[in-house]
Image (cartoon, rainbow, N blue to C red; front, side, top):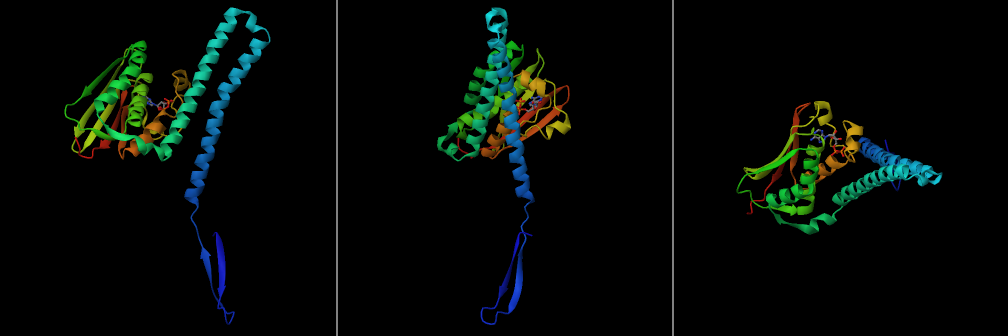
Length: 261
Ligand code: ADP
């Protein structure tokens, strides 16, 4: 019970009744707790590389700078930590940008081929380095998609990047696209480590990782799939996972087309 009011007849001052206002604040409490967890997570994720940087700076200052082999090694690690913080801040900015309203200003028609071309340009080298065959299968005649090109590209980029990151060297990653009725359906398929059913339910949560050290080692921020989920919603689409632990995963994005070619 949030509050109550007693009301009376103005003339006779007779008490007419009491109104109780009952508000369900379960949802509000839940949102507040999600927000608190998020702030705690962000602080922790930033604090870890900062502590490590501070340690290296102290060691360099107290003499290690004079030994080039040690200082080179330290500077390389410091560079990795700074890149990690940078990636985290960029992902945080992207999440908050997606949640704001500005984004619709740049809506346009684009083709799925352009998206996959640009994503592959970014990821080809990464795939080669991991000895992973990255290929595509785009069916002919998919109509143009309407919306923000950069966000759509970010969504396919995050999914394909994950497919490469979580696949053993020598594996395969395929991005497929086709039109099914009035939808464009994109499958990002990998022959990687796979995701257990209990984790499939949670991997779209911010900072949820199945294996934190592997994710960090691969340069992950833990925000990639949270960003994907938001972009899918922006396009009024859906995303599903079909995965077998130890065998591979298929992430399927289904986006409604508005019928225009
Ligand atoms: P990260 O930056 O850790 O990759 P994401 O939000 O992109 O964060 O993904 C969350 C977690 O989901 C990852 O840490 C990983 O455990 C799991 N994951 C995502 N994509 C795949 C995939 N294709 N195969 C196996 N696991 C995956």
